[in-house]
Image (tube, rainbow, N blue to C red):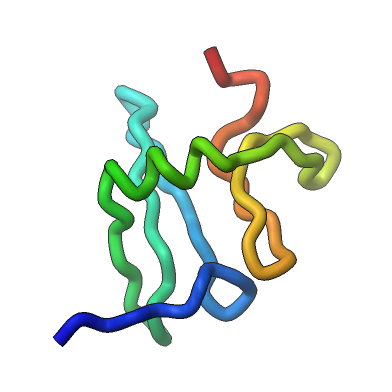
Length: 80
C-alpha cells in the first residue's frame, strides 16, 4: 500500500544531515512520531530547484519553505 503524506510543515519537518567528510546531504522528513523517511536523491534535487534563501537566527541559509515554515539545508555562504 502506498502511503500519501501531507506536505512538509510544522508537523512534518524536513531536516538535513551533512556528511562530515564529504558534505553530502542526507535529507529526512518526519512521517510520524519518532519515524523519519530518507528523501530520495531525485526528489531532493527537485525540492532544491524550488529552494530559496532566508535569514535564520542572524545567518543566511538556503532551504525550503513549506507549510509556512522554513527548513534550512545549507548556509548560503557554503554554496558554490
